[in-house]
Image (tube, rainbow, N blue to C red; front, side, top):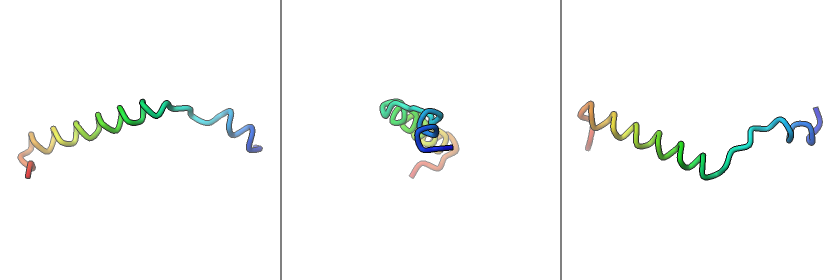
Length: 40
């Protein structure tokens, strides 16, 4: 597999999508911490 072939098969993600997913995961972690009483 050459470099140009690997570029065609790479997963293409929009940077805004990555930020939205990471924000959602962070909010879910904070909500679970709050629900289990681990909030500082």
